[in-house]
Image 1 (cartoon, one colour):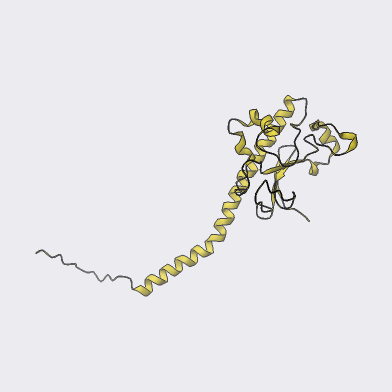
Image 2 (cartoon, one colour):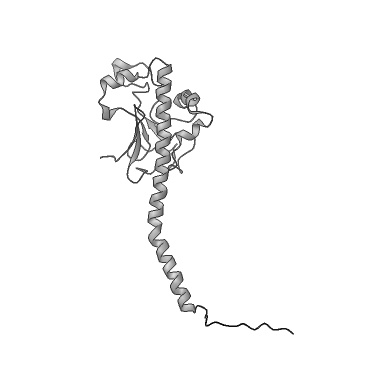
Length: 196
């Protein structure tokens, strides 16, 4: 029978205690890094959300250019992914247009609804008696009537800006580290911390 002799060069194996210390250090590093990783993951989701809103903003402005300066609509606040402004903007957003209406931070939300809330007067729903028509506003009217900071069109749905609706499923808020993404008329998107 052949036996293989091992020639040692002064090497020794790790003891159980040393192995446990190494495992403890690795676990501690993971525990320290986990919050940073979750924040990094949420920042990337927020960036995707902002890009979706920016694309929708460009589509809204292209639509308005093709339709006598009127915004698409009518649409009220929370809307489904079938019909309304989603279908009106589909030619401007491309074949996968429904993906633009989903925020990655709203994974628990019912997938039949958009993750963004529309500013209903701009898109044709008016509650004032003199403005009962369902004609969406024009970009020119909005620019002349509303100050720059209040010209927002869409925003993330969260617990701060809608009454809980059982159709939507659970929605936490604000979804992006205490802020929501807001689309303005000029296709600019900002992270805004809500105030009570």
